[in-house]
Image (cartoon, rainbow, N blue to C red):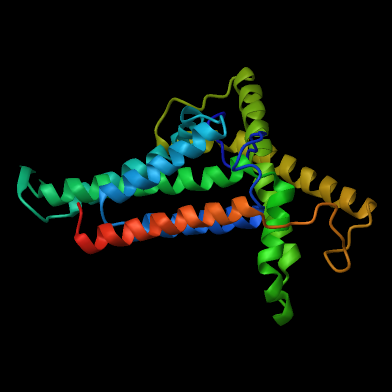
Length: 268
């Protein structure tokens, strides 16, 4: 539970922290697209170097960011295994009956696993360096043109930011309930898959009750403060673009140019 880093905000004061939240949202989407269009490990290395610079310039540290990969280890391992055993391109390295491992399968498995890891790391840069309030303002500002066709930009951005904000809170609540149930004799570790699933019932029921209670308390608090949506609301902090936002966009544009060059040259 303590390894869940998504939704957590790491306070700081560096170049990334001073960027406009709209710029960080756009750059995050651009990085995710960059991860998908990359066709070589050289491109992945370029993106990883950028993430590494983000980790050390913000003083968050790469070790803290890698902690967020632990809850996704099963998904990454499953993706690696499926690509390893199902891809039959290239030379055969090993064979056990119908199971075959080829050079193409190994490359594809490693490629897809690294892609998943980079996707998580790029997303963490946004959530760790942007407060939920700034994230809400940024998303609302970017989606505001859609409100002309009836799209609830403010409500959608508010729900997304609240969801991100309460992920660490729910994880902490889950850990407290788990320890309380273990003190009462509950066993979450032994047994087969079905027995472990049944053992999760004493954990999930109190968690759902607690989540609904928190949601009700939050709704009452918002009503007590006369919250009625985004119509006519003003902002205490006005979002403005600065020179640093242009510099960040220029850096991502340079990465796109390099990635396109790598793909055109067929760099492996």
